[in-house]
Amino acid sequence: MKVQQELHLNEVTLDVIGMTCANCALRIEKGLKKIPGVKDVRVNFAMETAKIDFESSISKEILMDKIDFLGYRAVVHEDIEIDGEIQKKEFKKLKVRVIVSAFLSLPLLLSMIGHFENNLNFEYLSFLMNPWLQFVLATPIQFWIGASFYKGSFRALRNGGANMDVLVVLGTSAAYFYSVYLTFIFNEKYIHKTANLYYETSSVLITLILFGKLLEHIVKGKSSKAIQSLVNLQPKKRTSLEKKRFKRSLCLQFALEI
Image 1 (tube, helix red, strand yellow):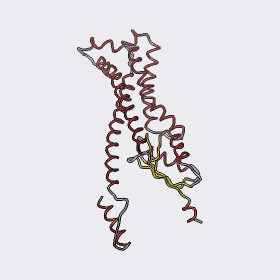
Image 2 (tube, one colour; image 1 turned 30 degrees about the horizontal axis):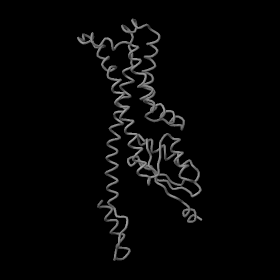
Image 3 (cartoon, rainbow, N blue to C red; image 1 turned 135 degrees about the vertical axis):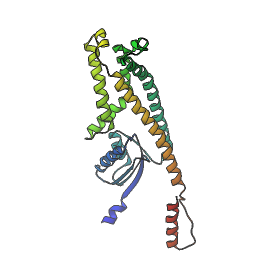
Image 4 (cartoon, helix red, strand yellow; image 1 turned 45 degrees about the horizontal axis):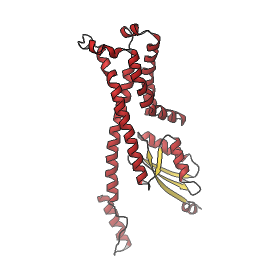
């Protein structure tokens, strides 16, 4: 009976897009294993792949929909061109977000100089201390540039977990909404002299985190290509005139040398 069940198992390799840490890979494994009929799941964070053993009664679309529900994207590993296009689009979007976020965060970062005592350049930067100007600069960073953090935290909490997105949202939202409260409660003249705003804190944090993700995306892409090139060195077909036992030992030796 056990042999018969194993004969009906299918295996598929999916390319998973959107994982940011090892905890993401663990969450995908747990989520897929909850599907009735899924026997084994192995998610590789470095290669961004998921190998799944499942019964023939389950379709690939069900597995991909589950990954999408968890907050990630998946394509069949054979669809290399589709996967490459998605990766390029994600990289371009991330690059644009980093550039725009850095452009909007720079004035907020310069406004911090106005808080330093005996600052000779304060008179040239005093206009940046305007709370309404800071509000206008920080709002698109918080809710447009940082929208992915809110979406990721919502999906993580919906599935009963927490990830880095939740921490980012908690920290940046606290600084942003406290500054919004001060901006709308106190008048401009009073807040300019006495109140401390933290718009630059939330904006700069989001910018730096996105910049780190951009660097991670570049490094991970190079590492994945290097690993894949090493895997491709292994021949798929081999011809041997020796016995079967000698052939197997030769394959093992070749794999170890790679």
